[in-house]
Length: 110
Length: 184
Image 1 (cartoon, one colour):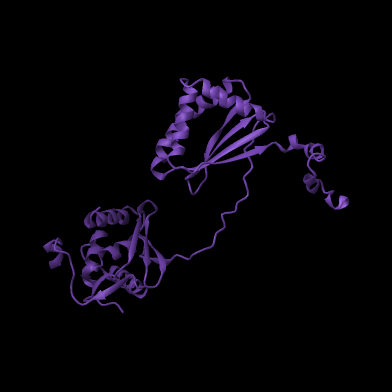
Image 2: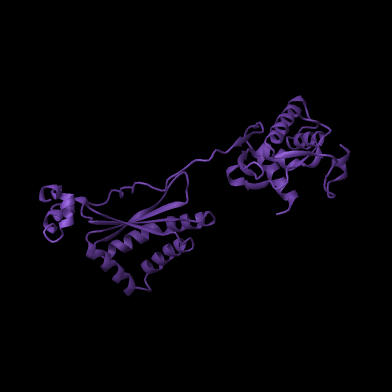
């Protein structure tokens, strides 16, 4: 179940292999050995799962799409893909924010 | 590459898309594949050609442009230079297999088996020629991948009666002539 206030990160030991020339990335989940392909937008959401909250993922995703703020469609997309990624054990929720130190303050404030 | 440039690259990929695509994750299903493949027939060559030799190799992705550019510039000269030797050898062209792209094939045609050796000798004697240089450059592209496989095709019509005449000397060929059971 998606939670805008939950913090998302990639599952441990996840293997990510970008294939930018083909416009997708491959991920391997060693815990349940399976291989997945992610299209660019799903790949973007995966990369945004660096410990930030679901809401922050929505904002960054909307930002990439040149939207001032996440509209209902964007929120639904992010919600859907985060639930799917979590179900497939590609991302997981962590207890507290793990946003990297280099994250700009403006992005933290949003 | 650091994380932020990775992220920027993905953002560019998303923005460059002609239409917005919903995020999607697909399970990649494994499939069993056999490496068995029927040898492909040689391309149409002159009816006089007795032997077609096919070089089959993979070209590294990073060398694609250089290799294809080299062919674009050199193929006509290479073909003409081989023809000018006038020893029954000809360059049949280099082809890429699509959609994979990296498997390539180069075709050489010869009027006889002896012409193969003649071509080799002619090359060895002309190491300063443009032909030798172009030939070496072609081979150098293949060498860097170390995947060269060679196939030799003989014009089937030239094998007519060959089996029958060789049968007396080699009884195992009876199998091909369909007469093994009669003798046994």
